[in-house]
Image 1: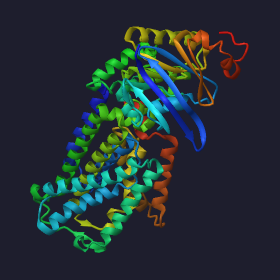
Image 2: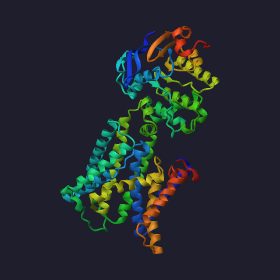
Image 3: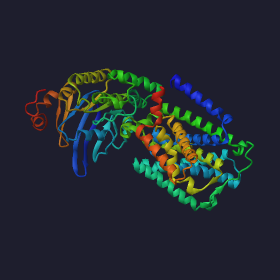
Image 4: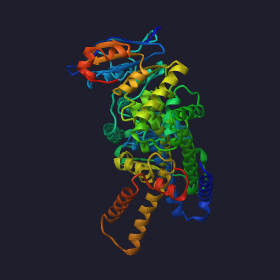
Length: 242
Length: 323
């Protein structure tokens, strides 16, 4: 499998605070990769660098053979990377369908085609009954779904998911996992996800990268990583049952 | 738009077309003023209501538009149909300069609003020193005979100005309705609601905000041309005054920011209110200085307290039409 996304030796500091240091991450084409680690480990900072929100201080980010570091967020989206926000950012005054239509317009020739595509995605993520409601009326789990729907509507080749399972009940979490598996299988969508809900990470990810204090401390298959003493020590804890 | 909304719109249109034949000259001038504010409010609404960029200096586009077309007519006798294009070009240019400075360097929210005020203010001061345009003493366009319609020079009786403003307002409403349903409308509203999220969905926010400024300033320039040929006198102190900018935005704010009918309804309510208070005070024989402004302010306060999203969204719910 060739790499869809390569993060090569990327570093980022905020006013002297080292958020990410010399991180190397490969996301193979069509894979689902989990990014885990304690709070403040630098996971979201890496996402934001990939998505073009922050410029990296050092290193390169390559997507499908092309350097994307230095691009603006909208250019990163155009390159084929969709993202969700950890702190959800719905277009509160717009209806659910209109929220997703905005995303769908990115690759749709016109508004009616975008609406049609958006309606399919809204349905797929279980928001069909709420499509005419304003996004501001949604509960948190629904807002998370809306984040995903909107990002998916841009027809990305790589989807960055930032804690979309947080706050979901176990059954809702399982539904979401199933939805991602389905999209990954059917459309070959590559996914990189930041997640604290280990139930979801273990069910979804084929590979896991563990960050701590801005550095990669472990990587590999989920089964190996969760037994890694360094990971147990800093993040999962000795007694973790997964 | 549902059936009921279409029927109401049609009825309103018919009423406005027939109005000059039943209304007296005073009512006609009030109606012209309402349409003027409805149109200009609609133009401002494109920038703030749709794209979320608060301009508190829209008088700059009215003023520059008015002076551009006015000066061509005053100095060279060139009619407003040609002057219109110069007015639009200059206003758009100024809008793009303001937009570029703000959007390129991340000036947003209240700071953007301050920038728009600053531009309007120094343009006012600049025009005070432009003798070619009359300076602080003003520029006066020759008023020809008022009873014959001279479309080429946009001279004629009040009824001509009324219908011109009615046509402009109708065109602006149609344009805005179309814009809202287009790609631009979706992108603008996304930018208004959350710019970072909009950008993550592939929207080049700089470009789309610049488009909003372009359309809004061009539309407002046309207000300026109308103003010049309707009132025939232009003073920098008046036309660029920040009070004028506030006047422009009160209609859409009271009527409903971001809605299609808010600017129209707001303009009607405010103009009728202002005139109504004057009439009422005269009828009661009250001559207390400033009482009109106090009453006007109290009504605005009440409107904003009880209908924070504007009169139109509240009214639209009641009469069962979409917003």
